[in-house]
Amino acid sequence: MSKKNLHTNFEAAVEFVNTYESPIPADILLKLYAYYKVANKNYNNPGSKTPLINAFKANALIQAQNISNEEAMKAYIKLVDLELKS
Image (cartoon, rainbow, N blue to C red; front, top):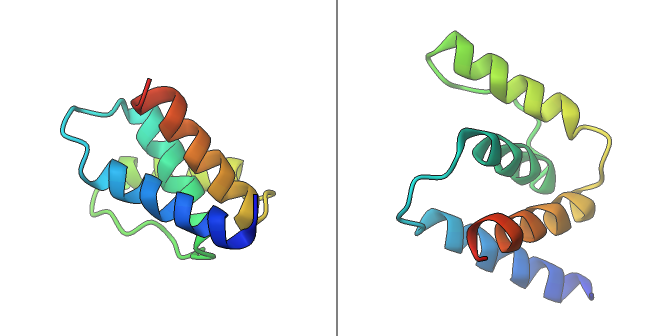
């Protein structure tokens, strides 16, 4: 997949998630969150006002920290396709 196609597919997957109307399980949301942050090279600390949510988000980021931004985009797209579109 070319870089242009990857970015286009990633943006489409993000749009799909942003307009998804059914509840998304928390474990899937955390993975999507981590892949999105890595894909966009945003390594800022989670900004929730709830410490427990911050802990879960930080843990998800730690688990995804060793992948490239391109790998994160591919993982995000794959997760959306497998868990939300199937």
